[in-house]
Image (cartoon, rainbow, N blue to C red; front, top):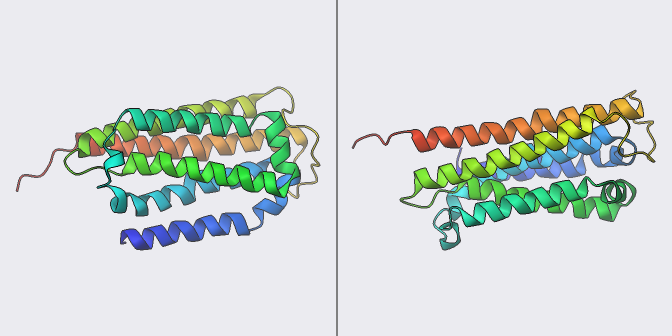
Length: 208
């Protein structure tokens, strides 16, 4: 597929995530909230970035192949963990506007992470791939840690929401399933992306 087709596919998946049934389930279901989050940053946005990366690879702002990825990775950490603090999480599940702000911030910062990881400036493919791998590995680590903390918590972290969620889950089970979704989708996809970039960096160019 061409980059344009990949980009359109990613945008279609993002639209489906935001216009589909999951946002309506968010107020009463942590599982739906986490599935929405992972559908955006773990599926739709990486595909969008794969379409965008070849289009922006020649831009000068990509030449900083260490400082910029580190800064974006740390910003992603702040955004993701910040929205999972009880106060902001409660706001995102109680207000349509807070949910929209949360989802937009997730999508934007994740897009920066993936585009920086996938876009390789001309002549610096190996270095760019390794820097991108480090970015994705770091993101995978903090998502895995957050998912584990949520899924293994001995009590509900986000109480105060209705739990007639349509999935037949108790409040505790709802939280545990949400944590597993973050581990299984977020952590694994970012880890796989990082390993793919390491393989790209180690691949020897074919002699002409």
